[in-house]
Structure formats: C-alpha cells, structure tokens
Amino acid sequence: MFILTDLRVLLRETAPLHRLDQQQREAAEALITGLQQQVNALREELLL
Amino acid sequence: MKCAELIDVRDVDESSINIDPIQVGGRLTPEAMKAVISYGDGYSVCDHCRKPFRLDSIKTPPIDAFHRDLAAFVNMDVARVVPGARRGFQAVAGTYVSKGDPVLITALSHYTEILAIEVCGGVLREVPKNEENMITPGAAAEKIEAVSREFGRPPALFFLDHVDYQYGNLHPAKEIIRVARQYDVPLLYNGAYTVGIMEVDGKDLGADFVVGSGHKSMAAPAPSGVLATTAERAKEIFRTTAAKTDVTGRTFGVKEVEMMGCTLMGVTLIGMMASFPRVRERVKRWEQELEKSRLVVEALRSIEGTAIRSECPRRHTLTRVDTTGSFDQVARTHKKRGFFLSSSLKARGIAGTIPGATKVWKFNTYGMTPDQAEYVARAFREIAIENGLVVH
Figure 1 (cartoon, helix red, strand yellow):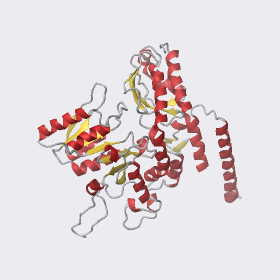
Figure 2: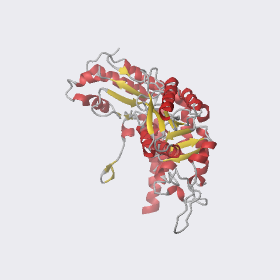
Figure 3: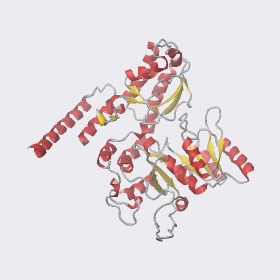
Figure 4: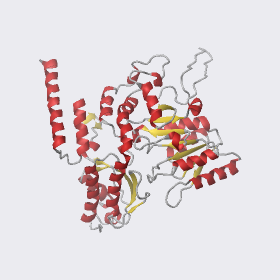
C-alpha cells in the first residue's frame, strides 16, 4: 500500500500530463518493481 | 473506481493541477498518506494512553513531544491540537468573552471568528479595511478608541487574520499587534493561511494566541489545527475542570475545559504529525512559492481586461482575480456561457475553480512544481487567445 502511495505522489507531481523525466522514470521503475515483488510475496504467503 | 457504493474515488490531485483556493495547503505529504492508511480506525492513537489519560501526555506515538514541537514551531510556550482553527477561536472566545463584551474583528475576518464570538454573546466590532483592502495599525487604534468610548472599556479580545481569506493580502500583523498591546487588548493571531506554509514567530509578533489550520495549511486531514499561547495565558485557556458530580462525586481533574478533554484522537492527529517534519522545512521555501504565484498572476495580468484584486506584487499564493473585463466578456456569447472557463481549464487538466465563475474568483498556486506553474500560466494565456482576447 505504501508503494502505491509513492506512485500516487508521483502522479500528483507530474499532473496533468504525467510526462516523466529520466529521474522520475527511474523512480517509477523501482516502485513498480518493488510492488511486483510484494504482490509475488503475498501470492506465495496467502495462496500457495 | 469507487471507495464505497455511493462514494467515488477522489483523484483530483492525481489527474489535475488543483488551484482550489482553500485545498492546496492541506494536501497530505506522502508520510501522512501512509499514516492515514495505518491509523484510520477511530481512537487509533490511544493504544498506549496511560495516566494521566490526556492526549498531550501520550508517548507512543510521540504525541507529547509533538505538542512541544508545535509550540516551538510558532515560537509560543504551550500548544494544543484542535479540531480546526475555528475550535481554537471558540476556545479563546469561551475563555475571555462574556455576554455583552465588545470583541474586535476586521472587515476581512473569517466567518468562524464571528460565530465563535456569537456563541459567547460578544458584540462584534469591525476594524475597517482601506481602499487597498488592507487593515492598518491606524485603523485598529481608531477602532479600539471608538469601542472604548462606546462601551466604557476596551475590547475583550481582538481577532486578526494575518492573511485574509478574501484577497490573500498580508496585513501588517506585528504593527497591529503592537497597537493592541498598547491598549491591553488580548490578540488572537489567525494563521489559517500562514502557519504551515510560511514562517510564523508568535513571540516576535507579540500575539497572545496563535491559531493555525491543519487542513488548510499544515498538510493534515480535516478537521485539525493548532492553538498556541504564552505560559501566562496557557493557565487560563487550558484550565482544567473543577467540576464534581453530585450523585457519584466524580471528578476529572486533568481534563481541559475548553478542549473538551481530548481533541484529535486518531487519523487527524497522526496525519498532522506525519506531515510535520516536511511542513517544518517547507515554510523555509516560501519565497519559491511566491515566485510561482507571481508567474501565474503575471500571465493573468497579461490578458487585457483582467485585474488582480489582491495586493501586488503578491505576497501570498492565494489571489483574487477579476475577469469581468476578459473571460466574462467571452462567456456572454460562448456556447457554454459562464461555464466555458472552468470547462477550458478542465480540458487542460486544471481543477479547482468554481464552475460558472468568470467574474471575480480566487485561486491558489501553493505546492505546484515549477513546471506545473508554467503550465497553468500558459493555459490561461492560451484560453484567452483561443477566445479572441488580447494578450500582451
């Protein structure tokens, strides 16, 4: 949830066009990667 | 997407640049957003409440330290969190105003100050504004003198808004407070539009009370705020209950009467606390905020027929603009009539104006990135050009 919050903040900072500069793209990439890892961990712990 | 059956998800600030005059200083920091998720349950900050069972004594989370930090932040001796600035006004009025007492406000005072005085039966007297929509020390002195003649005593209290909600003008608070002190009139400094976005030093100003708004200017959920005062006044304003019930003989010794006991017991306080480190830093960047405000203001001024009704150059990010001679002229023949402006802004991803308002309206640039400020400035010019207005 906190990673989603960080993505939400990124959306706010780049509204309304959401054109990310290089630094923002790297931040978004790291956040989304972290989110995927968290989702995988949840899947393993709850469903597998 | 919906939060609940009848509640749509709110994404105004994610999808748009929000220029709403009252919302922008209260947008949460990332830390507050996270804290709000974690502390959403009712009495969530009370997990570790121990004797003496009062909010400002709780150590985990460090609410006691936060109260001290808040007082230091506005350079006063004692602070309490309150459910909005208005409840701070009410607490002060409840302590110092009795029925029939004259109370000074100004011609630009917020309505909640008036209600706080009305609750106590106080008699309202206004310091008039001048032609520039400013409150001056001279006008304050004249009014105190007039009230003293009328009532045979000076006002019981003086409410002064450092920045008013109508024009966003920065009034000479220090000089006005000096006048109030000369007449021994206790003064409440209303910092709803200052505390949390610009530096405020209550002792330097000479105020007896400093009130701030969490949801207006401190990146906190509503309703939240701060009431800070001097050590001397704290004994009066934060007095504890002396009540004893007749049948059970119960007493509640540590509970503060004007605070109604504990004030913010959950998400409002934790949001305020979580944002505080950033808020404490952001007030030092006020000059950068003014640069963005001036950029947008200059874009509007470049549109022929547009007048800025707030003081210029701008000393605050809240601005009142009169577009009767520009956008309102367009509205007369535009197929969307008065809705064309908000509609054109919305199409560009700019939100926060009142639909249909094309005459006199307000906006606030606080918290925009430099790119967003330039985007807004450009958007106003583009809308003007598209609709045949002259842009210089």
